[in-house]
Image 1 (cartoon, rainbow, N blue to C red):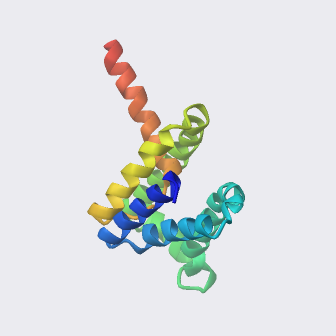
Image 2 (image 1 turned 180 degrees about the horizontal axis):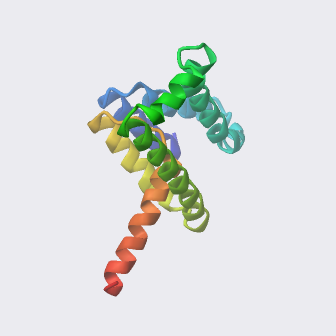
Length: 156
């Protein structure tokens, strides 16, 4: 059992300790692939898993529209009569999209940032009942924090 296996085993343990089936399952699947000698699949999974995961997440969010639980009229009313909630959702969606784009840029320039994102996500999931979604947004938030630290260090 090599170092990657031990890391995955530790993550699996943290997921179990934090009672988070998503982290536990993900680490377990990756560990199983490695132990079965299927590590060659990992780059393929890495290349497509993010897109597939985002597609599945968006599908889950859009199901109320697809099955008629949310109508076009209700959608319009969320802005016209919904008060601040509709507009807060609009602003939050905009901010998340912009942060996601900045996150991709940060990860392309500094791929080692992913290590902190993974461990931060694990802590948030395992000990604070978080869920492991939004790595691009987390990277975007990290980019904003880095810019703020740079500004503070320079004295604005």
